[in-house]
Amino acid sequence: MLLLIFLFLLSSHLHGVAFSAHCTTVTATKTFQKCMTLPTQQASIAWTFHPHNATLDLVFFGTFISPTGWVGWGINPSSPGMTGTRALIAFPDPNSGQIVLLPYILDPTVKLQKSLLLSRPLDTHLLASSATLYGGKMATIHNGATIQIYATLKLVPNKTKINHVWNRGLYVQGYSPTIHPTTSNDLSSIATIDVRSGSSATQHDNIKTLRTAHGIINAISWGLILPIGAVTARYLRHIQALGPAWFYAHAGMQLCAFFLGTVGFAIGIRLGELSPGVEYGLHRKLGFAAFCLGGLQTLALLFRPKTTTKFRKYWKSYHHFVGYSCVVLGVVNVFEGFEVMGASRSYSKLIYCLGLSSLIGACIALEVNSWVIFCRKAKEDKLRREGLIGASDKGSGIHS
Image (cartoon, rainbow, N blue to C red):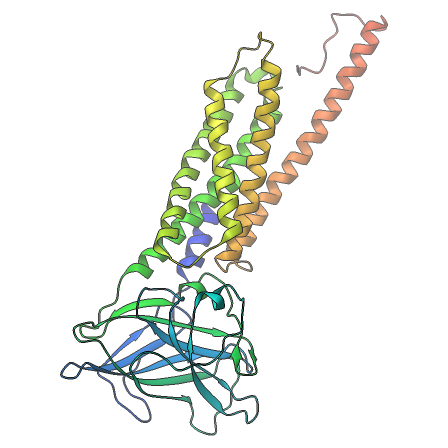
């Protein structure tokens, strides 16, 4: 039941990052032919394409997340990514406080934060540009304030698919916008739109679906089933009445967790291929480490020596070390996944924490019980050796 509740909440949360923003073709100064709601940040865009001279009139609607922040929109002439984007960024002038719109070219040094982002002329055919706050001249910049960035571009003939890139940040240093937040939505603010037909590439929808599946599958497999399988082996194998049933339960859950985790791992690899320029270094490294350790554990089943061989104790040490390492890495990476998906304060994470806490509480109770039984059995063995009790007296019913 707990898994079902967690699955439902996680799915509903991730799919719930939908956008209440709606597009409009009418502004205070212009009317456009087409509009589209962009997939992140409650942004939208409206445009008119003039095929006779390959000219594009457009307006981008974005929102500030800080009174001292910035909002930017641009096009990438080479690829759907941030690096190489020719951007127009609006922010309050540090001297007058009025909205200023400046051109920027986002090169690799900006992505690596090696240098400040400095304004410079664009090498694209930008015919005109301007920016206004929604509400007119009397409007003020605040958290949630809407900005309209207008631009007129001369496109390359017969090239109507445009890579749009947009984002927003918290601060501006002088006239240099600082790095934007790095949540999943912020790093996915890219869309390829055919300005002639009005259609957009479905890549973002595919990415959102894959991201949801990746999160659900990995949270359940690496984050819950794998630890439960480890607990099963540690605390059930000493119960004499179960016989070999504990082993089949342990092996079954671990294999199920690994195969599900393999699917989630493969989806993660595919997400990386579909998101050029979007990197989650720590999450990726932890994922590779957990997958490799899980693979080693699975292969270890094929080389499991018999209990009578002298290599059995070395195999058990290896099996325990790799297994517990895999569990720890898997759980840590689930929490890291919540961070990169922007769900660090979601109900999904709360439900997962409750489930994990329940498992940890059960482990503590079972550990205390095991030590009580162990101490009782050790005491009985000592009394038996001293002849104070008979050898026929029953013990605890637990064997090691």
